[in-house]
Length: 297
Length: 316
Image 1: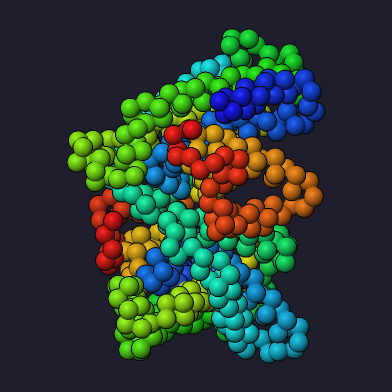
Image 2 (image 1 turned 90 degrees about the vertical axis):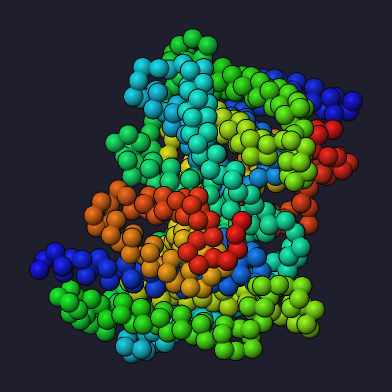
């Protein structure tokens, strides 16, 4: 019995992590799919969402807001700070769409550097947390393991967002435009689609997914200035394993990375990310388009 | 001709520097010379072969840790042996890693190198019995050309013998790289960069040339990495972290990847600018990020493009 409880615990913590990873990776995928830019700054957006989320919750609590409702300011702040994406797209990215992808990659690296210090300047270097709000919804017993209800809420929310993205991509006009652009930009443009607006919207959407992921993770942990550059390599692993540009890939990749990492930590902590990077290398060497990718190198 | 005059001037200035500059500025030159060696190699891959590695810090880490392991776990204290060992280990690692990486170009090449870099970073972090984990390892003061200099003060050692030793290594690295890029091999690399299909049609094995450039650049990175350890007396895993890989690509771009000496100028500007900024505010990343964004958008030729007319990457 003790063993199976342990297994459930490990799996659930892995799935919780996967739920967060999926959001960031989905943002990375939609941007790569449409704009063909591998956004290294997606981890920084995640960190930014986390910090803004903490501040919003702290302000909410200080203003006397009921603890049970803390997710409202958290989610609102997480989504609102996604507007940074619009500023970045209009202010920086739009100048380099016709450049070599090396320059695009380096521009997003410039964002990583800048955002890291913006966070240090604004929030300092000490970790920020939402205190005891994590367990405000209590814990439930699931297959013998004790799980914070908040984790289940995040997993459910992430699943709902995955469904929402699927609906957006397959059932709406905007989704059709996104898919058409990903497939053939010139043709989409020739059919009268205003690329500037599509790019601005897509990048904002991608950023908001990342910032929301950051906001949602924060009650379970603390915001730290390195969290962004650490997450980007995990999100990177997710999209490589799942396949660049594929939403289904982001979903399955996040599950693989999240659960594998949780298992590695519980079985042999030294392995932690090592196992995942080795998997990334194996995928890149044996099947570079990943599980669901369509773009072959 | 003016190029030669500038070069002679710079060389004289660097020889005379310890006599005229403050000790502080002379010690700042040490990481510059180490990164200079690293960037000469990186640019063989980036500027001359057209492959952007986002995991080159892997080889800096290999070089630095090879040196550190030799001084702490064995009795080897000779810097010559440390540099040679760093180069040999890097070549041994780069041969298989490169063979896998050069099967791809562009973003996939970048991703694969990043993944290999992170494997090594995690290894350094987690296998602390050998590597000291996140605290890193000490690097004991190496002897130079068989001379045991333990009796000297630390600063005197660094601004004196170690400075000239690094300068000599950098000069040798420049000479060797100059020969490489101006050899038929270097010409083939540029052909492979500009038109791989045509290169293949001409009978060149594109992969072989890319692999060769990868291994050479790895050896350079490791030799430079081994030079980084002794001045601080310490190496740690952040040397192999992916942001460090990003920073060295940044340095190359800052100086200009389209010219032979551009990356050296970039390393120099990066280190002295970082020092200046950090003496005023600790937020150098914010300023450097903005600078990088500016270069990418407005001045992709880097600093070198400001000084020279538009030249091909033939060194002028």
